[in-house]
Amino acid sequence: MISIVGQSLNEGVYVSMAVAGTFLLAGFVKGVVGLGLPTIAMGMLALFMSPGQAAALLIAPSLVTNVWQMFAGRALGRMFRRLWSMQGAIVVGTIASPVSVATIDVRLGSAGLGAALVIYSVLGLRAKPLAISESVQQWVSPAVGFVTGVITAATGVFVFPAVPYLQAIALRREELLQALGLSFTISTIALFFRLAADESFFDIQTQVTVGLTAPLVAALVGMSVGQKLRGKFSEPTFKRMFFLGLCLVGVHLLLKGIVV
Image 1: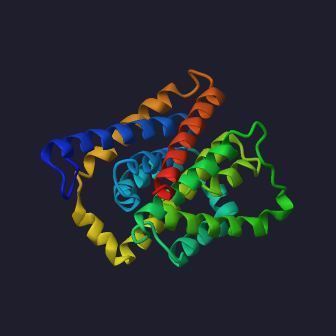
Image 2 (image 1 turned 120 degrees about the horizontal axis):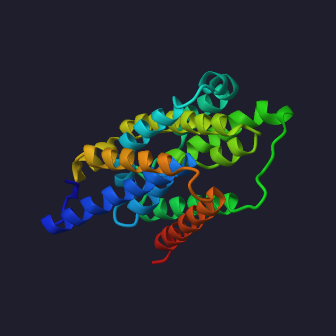
Image 3 (image 1 turned 180 degrees about the vertical axis):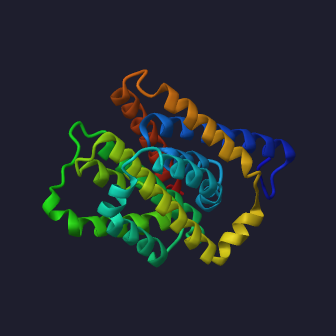
C-alpha cells in the first residue's frame, strides 16, 4: 500500500488506488504511442501529492518500461551513435540544474510542471511537426539535451524539448521508439542520481510509504495491453486525445501553483 505521512488508513487506500490507476493509464498510453508514462504520471500524481513525492514514485516504473522499450528493436546501437551527445548533455543538465523537484517550493514546482506540460501539449497538437535539418543537428542535439536535463531536474518531466526534437529529425518509427526509450532511460537514471544527491529526497522517502511493486506492475500491465492494441484504432486521434488531456492537467497544475 502507498500512504503519505499524516493520512488516515482510508486515505491511504484511496491514494494507493489512485497511484495504481495512474500508472495503469500511463503504461497503456506508452504502450500505444511509445511515450507518455512520465508526463501522465507526474501530472496526475501531482494533483494529490507534491511533485517531489510524485518523482519518487516515478523512478522504478519509468526505468523498467523505458529499458523495455529501448531494447524492443534493432536500431539501438545506431540511435546511440547518433544521439550520444544529446544523452550526455541530458545527464550534465540534470546534475547541474540549480533546482530540483525534490527541493523546489511545492507551489513553484506545480507551476513549473504545469507550464512544461502545457508547452509540450501545444507542440504535440501541431498539425505539422517541426523539422530540423541534418546540417544543424550536430550542435542542436547537445543543446536540446542540456535544456531537457535542466527541466527534468526541476519538474520530473523529461519530454521537453527532447521529444519534439526527436520527432523533428526524420527518424523511422522503430528508430523513434527506440530513441525515445534511450532518452527516457538516461533521463530517469540521471533524475534518480540528482534526487539522491539532494538530502531532502530522503525526507520525501520517509514521508511516502511505498509499495514499489504496485506502480511498477500497474505500468507494465498497462504497457503490455497498449502494445497489443497498437494499430487497432486511429493513432493520430489517440494522440490528440492524449495531448488535450495532458494540456488540461497542465493548466490545472499551473493555476494551482500561481493562484493563492
